[in-house]
Length: 468
Image 1: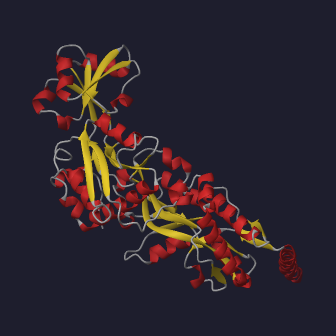
Image 2 (image 1 turned 30 degrees about the vertical axis):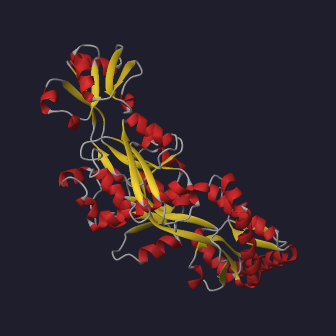
Image 3 (image 1 turned 120 degrees about the vertical axis):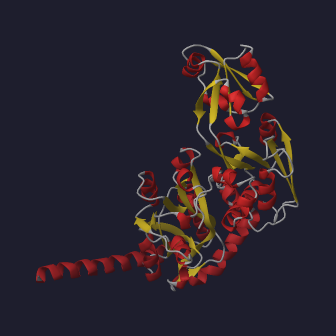
């Protein structure tokens, strides 16, 4: 027992000696010790900023790998000289930490979920979520909710994501900067819901408080000179920075195709949704209705601010999808005169021909051997099939009369999918997206969104999920 106590005492004393030795060494070399480093684009951006601002004051930065929850304790005690970037209320619980009053990074607190299970995925309707232990932004958010949130804690954000993939939780909560890259390739059924948007600040221990005015002034100068914006471009983070306080975007131009009850008149459902969602920030929403191919091209060419009613794969190179969908499209069906013809074309066992409306991306459901005919109206496709010039046609059953459906054999070729509003990937587009989603969720919770649909059946088919 005595030996064990002596061993423990030796370890404690050695740790203290090591700490003070490191502390003395840091003082001698003007070194600031922070937690980290990390390799995400956001972390590299923050680390580059910190390196620059401290270098201008004659300091260099060193890092020590510390778990998130413990990093607060280590910095508050002075064993670390500060924290790279944290939400803006850390000093309430850790009084030895001093905030540099300049937002060094903006991030969203987000929840990843499967929209097939929860629709728009409100966290108050999710049975259980996973998140990282010590994630202060989420704890602050959780305590502000009226209803309790069942939480499983993990060591790393990736573990929370993996628990979601394994079906052990219904949602994974993390910073938008920690969303795994594979999320963006998993398909349009997955949704990233923004719970709250927050700024991150750099914190230092009060023993370095004399540096605060100079650090603050240096950050302001870097912003004024464009140096921060240059770093944002280097690390591919320009889309994280836009002014959410802008509330006047003037006239917003939209592009879409004509769909019965949804875009075929000024009282169409999609138009009413856009008018309501952007009412506070747009003087008017003017939408050009044309065929879908032209509508998409208009958006791709930058002539329109928004593309209304698009599949995820139709966003284009410079488009960003709304996280919340605007509707849920019914399945796409293939029609033919006989089962033999239908199976032959769909299986690719022999060359065939298919027809669908101009601009619809139904080719993804067909073998490469199929020759495509695009026409302005579905009536043209039906006529081509009747005349034997085309083997099959593809459309939504909703667009056909029952008498027309009865004349053909059919098979579902594309499952029902969410439809989105697509925004330009620019400061203006990102700002419009922010306000659209914020107001869409407000309308959903208040019941206003439901009133904009033709009837309850159509609203339910849009799959916004159960509301709290």
